Length: 225
Figure (tube, rainbow, N blue to C red):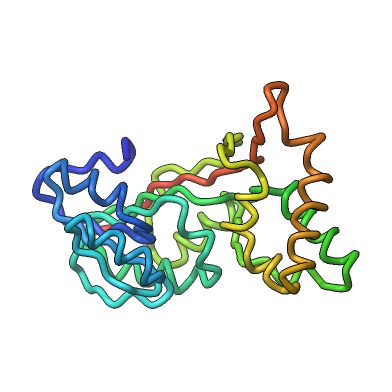
């Protein structure tokens, strides 16, 4: 949000708005904001806040020269067709508009992914095929942005260990459905238990709190005038 530095009267697209929490924060700052998300349930939650939220696939944006900025938080790693996302953002921005995003970066949840793949392999599944995420390096993301014509003002990769209030089991049920969903209900619970057991020695701190091994990629890019 600080990098976006939204100004009253600007028009902003919140790409992957989820339940609208940050979208509402933007609106409170005097910004005209549109939220888009591929999940109809999330969009309904955002609309319940009185927001202009729409069901739109981030890989198929259909705006043209409309926004002063595109903002995205913790969403783009769910959109593996990165070139389509970047192209859609370019089209949505006015000349001179800025693209500000934070997403999962290279190495994000590395330990969790490894534990999931190991557990699935033990039960006859190929966990690598279940990976729904796109976690680029700064170099990869810069190249894609610059190929489309963006000027990359800053881009950085950093560790952001994140406490999980609900524990690892809840996190897996929420975010790793593509992995554990390949199994039957009974086997699914077994896989979750095996993953938690494998991760407990490395992702639980001295207080007993689960800490996810997040790595984030943050960038600012501008569509030239």
